Image 1 (cartoon, rainbow, N blue to C red):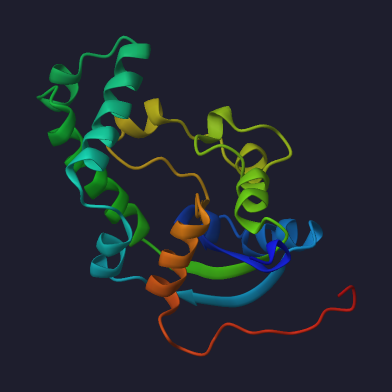
Image 2 (image 1 turned 135 degrees about the vertical axis):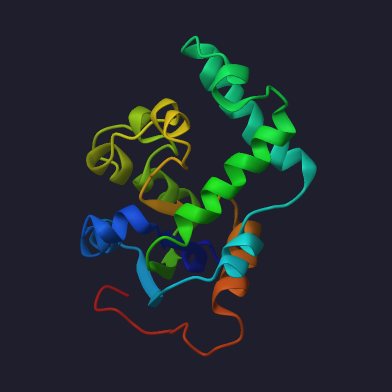
Length: 192
């Protein structure tokens, strides 16, 4: 394994596109000596986004558990708000919010390559919840959304970017979003 050539998948989400942050987000990665080797703006279909997110019961229940935890933290009754307190059923609702959000505007998909690219990109992006992300990260600098606000508005958390969590997930997502098309480039930079 060549750690200098690790690849990861990034997707700028609808709020990142609508806030005109495409260039800024790409700049953050390039400033850390990561190389953009594939880049495309596109309008996803519901089917593409549906296939992007896991459908297994445990993952969906975990989404519901996160929502229930947020409600508990802020003293909100899930039955009063959502008409239920079943983690799996709530998870299905949240997954639908995610699909609706991700198809609401164009996205930017890209493949980034570099030293420990998966971990480096996630560090640059910041933690998933913008209200908890450190200043200096993409989410910490450009978003203040939270699950409490998103749940109350019955929508997904707007957190600007998606970044693969593991090299295996990156490989799967690159294949899913770029397929076999020859759009991933290999080139030398001045610093290589």
